[in-house]
Image 1 (cartoon, rainbow, N blue to C red):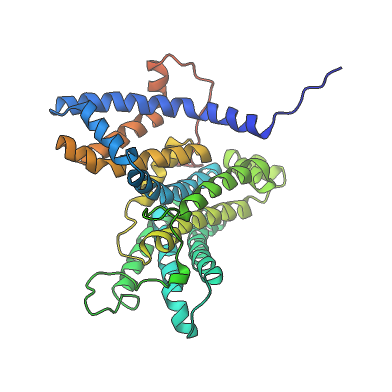
Image 2 (image 1 turned 180 degrees about the horizontal axis):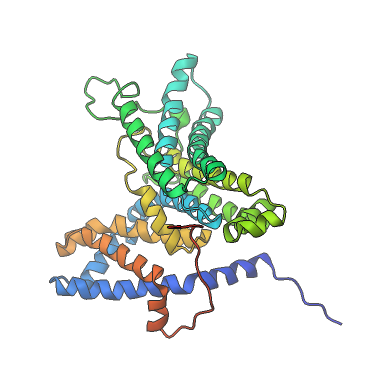
Length: 374
């Protein structure tokens, strides 16, 4: 008698991709069609606009490099928000956690050699700069997790408040003790980090760096964590039903704190990689919007790591190609924000997409956070 072979890892991944990608794909298609109609109404040529968008984001090696640069922090921050979603939490604090990670990475990057009085080898200095930024982002989010677990404080309100604290504290530091002391500097930014704390480019002549490869690797690790480990099972179970999780013996409070800690570490990693791989310093305002775009990316990617990678590329391509689109059509760059809003509208209201394309619902529903508005 033949026994059915268990599904391979590859088949599981492909099935998961298929289930998660249909509605987002149709949402993007619908938004592109509707966006083209709007472009035509305002007097533009939708085909020329989309041609410029594709050329500016994918039309050359340099364009691809710049799109990958945009996608890198989006992937990390999107994974941060998605991981919290899986645990039933709504982390709106990725913006602040990213800033905290960036400022501490910069501090280690330029300050540590000065404090020690000698240069560190890159094999020590670079992981230390990234690790400290990642850790501080995790601690910043872990505070919110502890408040949620032990006081019931809503993570949405607390992460928003922590954003204000993080961003204003960062502004104070960059305009004060951490400001680049160079005589000609009038910008709120840190000194350049040491060479030993920098991530090298992937290709000579292009700005894309090894942080992009790390982002793809981390996306796979998060998928593995959520689907193949005990901790991932606990995070998903608490996210679906904390009462059932507690009845099953899962420490719900600890899981909430760990989930927020890991989420913050991913957001902090986004800031660290931007400092060590691209800007080589922390500059006030460099990351404005990344944390909030990450919420949209996580929603569009249905909180699936691969979906987040793809949606990050979409957002990155739209941001990177916007300038070329504007040059060819003389249309405002704000149209890109309109397209993003349309995509998210159709993803969030997936019943509209199902109705348009006559797709039967399988009874699925997305739970973003427990007790929302309660």
